[in-house]
Length: 92
Image (cartoon, rainbow, N blue to C red; front, side, top):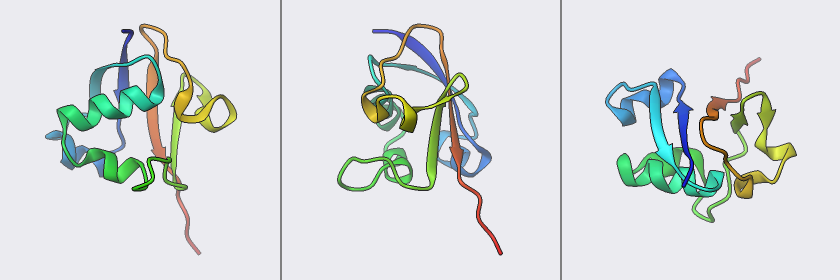
């Protein structure tokens, strides 16, 4: 399986012992999230709803492309890519 690097925002690093850069394995984003959950139990809850779908305020980018405009959680991964998790920011 391809090995990729996930970059997490500060708000999720408390779940990963303050690690910002995580090496993960998986053929798709869905697999990557499963690997993250295996390494850091409970992290998936912050990324996905109970149904397994990506939370509406969580954005995942492969290099510069938002997976929502690719194949969503089924977007394939190639070795060496950087995956960024970026939460939406809202305010008033």
